[in-house]
Amino acid sequence: SQQGEEDPQALSIQEGENATMNCSYKTSINNLQWYRQNSGRGLVHLILIRSNEREKHSGRLRVTLDTSKKSSSLLITASRAADTASYFCATDALTSGTYKYIFGTGTRLKVLA
Amino acid sequence: KAGVTQTPRYLIKTRGQQVTLSCSPISGHRSVSWYQQTPGQGLQFLFEYFSETQRNKGNFPGRFSGRQFSNSRSEMNVSTLELGDSALYLCASSLQGREKLFFGSGTQLSVL
Image 1 (cartoon, rainbow over the protein chains, first blue to last red):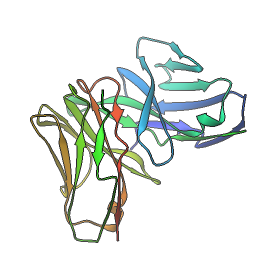
Image 2: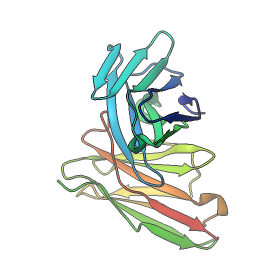
Image 3: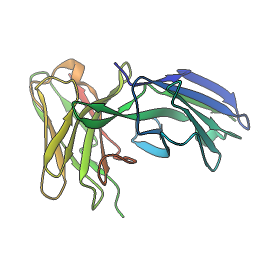
């Protein structure tokens, strides 16, 4: 089963509004990452937050991590039409003695101009 | 610095055939991982190679295999294709595998 699950599955907002999406995961992690994917293309790394960090900012992005609740949130402020994409969280899961990144099912964000 | 290159971009095959996909990582990156993306299942981890060795494997049948060459380029092979193998196959590279991943544009495989 998926290590990460995003919520909501889809989100539609007006340009200028803030968008918040959440990610829940199941096991202990070393870090959690957020990626963006434009339709049918590869994923682009947005931000990485380590397990000992609680909040991180990058431009209009703000990520929080709550390891006690095994959850993270991504906030995009002052959204633009160009932010329309799918957003995925990825966590490094320890399986059989090695680590691999497990991706959630994604949140499809649509920003209306 | 060139990005991750995947070839071909599109591929159409019929059931029962086999296919080989190629991935050239960013220069200096030793880890290459592969993912299958379908609308219903999201991104599913296939396997990761590091310095020519398979370091981790997902829950896919043995029809899915891969390898990595000494220059870190990687290939993924799927034998006896099934309709359900139709998907976007993505590869990602990183320096060591435990930090941010750089993705290629993917190979869109359609099995008819």
